[in-house]
Image 1 (spheres, rainbow, N blue to C red):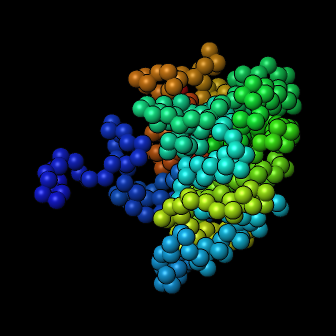
Image 2 (image 1 turned 120 degrees about the vertical axis):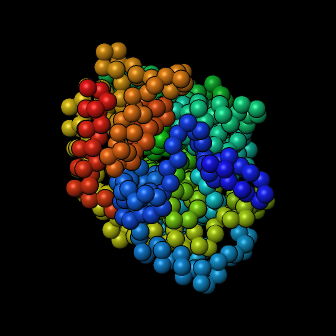
Image 3 (image 1 turned 45 degrees about the horizontal axis):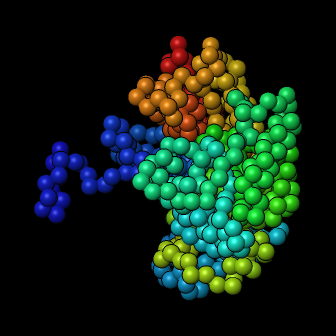
Length: 443
């Protein structure tokens, strides 16, 4: 179909090019949302099992957040990020209150990528050191700085195809399934994985390392929590070698793992927490860094860094309302219903031999799909780019039957990340649809 845009005759239906654009895929136009559901332009209903993009923790129609945005628009729609604003101040103070006890300061940004870059810049300046440690199969963003921190090769290779950012060093992940470490128990895995991190620190030179950046529970790269003792050991190593520990909570933050922040499920206090996505439940773009007083003192000495839309008043109003909703009832809802989600997924694993692992925490879960005869993925999306992937067929089947989910990175995993307002019947409906999808694809 042709479309006349500004006098230019285009052969495309729309001038808009989406992110992660795939010219072979069918465009999916979403026009409405309510609670745990979204609706396309034809009125079809879908249970949103991925919170759109791990964002809409409070669901798609939370009136408290909507009212807060409207009230801020009526008061003042924009205030420069270099000036004070009551909504901005209120949210910063609230975040410092709900974060671990030592956290005192907040700097806002716009996206999770930029939040991670800010945290790294703060760490490098404070420590006067260039390097940041991140794990293989991590995802920290897709801008140049954050893309270098990312351990997932698809994103990093795309970002670094013409230029690279320096100072990113990788270590192996503490994953239990197909682990690179020979361990007989989760505790041994945690110890060996942490000892490997110390090996990397000592071989890179501790004085050259500013920070270790890690997701408390892996996000889009596989939803796996760390083994017992791992984070406690990382904290000890960072203290021993004078390195900042940064928790990337872009996905795990704001109740996703059953506490306000995912790192609180590990009983460890980092030096910085980066956040985005769930802070406003996706109702407006907002991100930032929450810092301990030690880091905050360095930042308060002055910075030349800034963004036009960092700490946008409407986004901050949305964030304050969202955090109030999380505290009031939504995190409690996750804690009540997460055992139901886990139980249903475990029963699915028992039924289908192609499901070789189910892992996660709270409302962040992954289903690993592999060939049971070989113990390997049916398709490894990192090395095989033009092969039909049956995991995509599971996603397609689920969508056709009204349930939205997505693949992880690499794409032999399915990600499940529902809104907190989902109820037990909807959880069971979603898993029944997944059951049907596996029956259909792997019969």
